[in-house]
Length: 236
Length: 332
Image (spheres, rainbow over the protein chains, first blue to last red):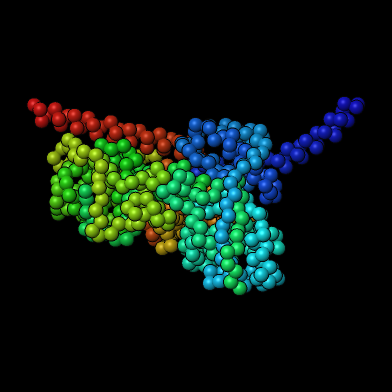
């Protein structure tokens, strides 16, 4: 009886935990698998994604791994013979994956806040109800972690933005935002790396090159790096 | 060396693509029709992945500065060598000062010019493909312009029949492995992707309707126009990696198919993914063209992949035999 009771108690608990922790695995075409961590965005989920990437990296059938924001895209060299088996292996690795704390470097990015390139600073003030001075201060006082690179060469998605200055992406993107523009997109921030259309909100400008195709590695930032923004000038 | 005499915009040096830097936000680039590029290279005795010219705006003219062998594959664009017509999917030995001309193709979008030894530009991050958006690779990271001169690697010519020789185009050689429609609509096979289920009953119309390739389409991606397919409530996904062939559904409800110069990451819901083996056909689709998606399976895709592999292997093994047979005839 005691045994049965214990079982009755433990079974539902383990079922709910397991189902809550199941990642979503989907395909893009025939040779790309996307694994999305369950639950809300947090650094713990991100660290588990990094651990998963680390674990599957040596698999010979993998051509490229693209860690995203709490997800991982696994691109194979060719269409797998047994797709279900491959998916099961990924699921197993997720179950085994714990956490990696990437000990990245710290990158200081000097920024000119405000000024001609901060075309969305006024809108950020309107949305947040803060003064421009407060928005800028909250931005440079933050400690940021590079969650993932993507979208454009060397662009780092930075986590750690103060919730008081979260700001949704623009419904109408800027058509020609300069490379180097310091931006806020939702709960993330980053420095744009290409001049062109951009839906994030600009609040400043940084000269530091984020990408050089001739360097090894070409991207200045890597997942796990810490980033600090250093206010070089504030033009308000 | 070859010299570009005349070109429209957006013609570039491409190979099979740049891999290994997608996790740094670097798109793969590479030929839109990788099969045509592979065949062109094999016809001139190269490995299938050497750099070639992708010509998508016409007319295009170039002059050879030395003897070499050239192959023209992909779209049939009435190629002429010193005014003399060449059949499509053809390789031929050329001599210094000869001029090759390509005109606007009547169907298909892109022609490939492969040269014995390949286009010799410096690889950047392991590839000679041009990334126009990134401004690197190929020739100074830009598209070709008149008076550009490009080095070709290797020794130059190898034994060929005097009037050249050709490969059977994949449309014909692989006809039974790629579906066609009666009305000329391009059929593109795809597999449901991550957010497919969210579209519910709406998803059916993704397969049944004929989509038009809008004028806002290029090497980055194709925007399709048709009757919109919308989600009951909008979904914003966390930024995740994507690959060419992904069919995303932005809030407008008209799909975007990402192509060779695609962003490496996206956040739009994904309704489907084009099977890799069909990407070359999509790469040959033209603005204004009509396409329909056909739901496929991995098993079907693998069967087509095996057929493509055998087709390429056949060309790879035939070309040197042809050379040896000719050399034997010359000795006799």
